[in-house]
Image (cartoon, rainbow, N blue to C red; front, side, top):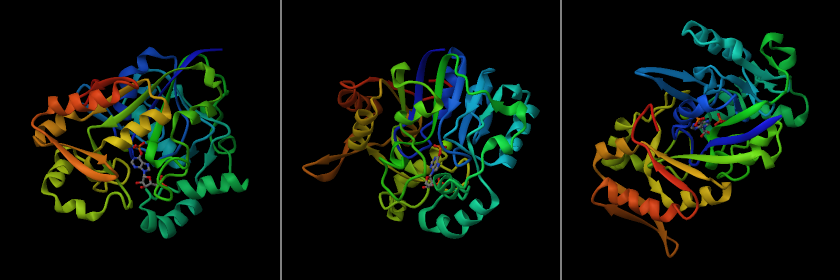
Length: 330
Ligand code: IMO
Ligand code: MG
């Protein structure tokens, strides 16, 4: 029996700092579970000054919590064990890590196809994600139960207080994102129930955003002309906007407030956390993109506080709004 489930997910194009939030609150739960995606994700966690990176294993492991990879995930077996060995070496209890028997396996053929056909066209992470999900849908996929040692297989039981940890984000969702510039899984809270609980059990939906936008991979919404704006180029460096998985430079843009409001409303966010306020403060330029009479427009503020107030006024009717400007705590 579960008490309740809280859900953390991203409200933009990934890399909003979901890992930081998940690590910060994991201690309040019995289990931390990933419901979507695979090694395309890259979650960065700081414990004190030490930086850790994971791709498939949920952040619960950093807080000694049962960490589950759910049936809607795709797993690269070699990378999974590389991550287990890395965490073991760093002193974490890897016996807490479990994979659903029904998660699908990413094969070398999936990776080859992704690298040959999709990476250039769509700017994928090249991890074989789309081909693995395609085979799942064609019902020719391979299941984790046949490839992962029994000790790491999950018995399918959810118990106590559950934290569901999303990967990728709202605008990368296969149904709601800007298809085809999306990933191949469901990134919104509705999909967390694929872990095996009723929607009635959802207590809080924690949406993680960033005070500016960024995107790695091909997307007409993020044209290369953004690199002509020297302030945005500076923001890439100040925010260290380089892919955790691919090391690619991410393109950045001013926060699209209309999109953020729409993502918050459609996904039913109860608590919104807006990260990287310190990065924008270091840039000392405060702009927001809004839509006015169907035309995009930039609003400029004289300081971070007045920008925060504007965001707060537009979002507080829908959810609690928290601003964060620290890389390890909320
Ligand atoms: P986290 O969980 C940012 C992007 C890729 C590409 C598109 C499809 O760290 O926020 P895929 O390999 O999934 O088929 O690529 O999705 N993408 C991410 N961008 N953060 C991620 O994960 C991402 N996972 C996939 O850049 O545009
Ligand atoms: Mg990331």
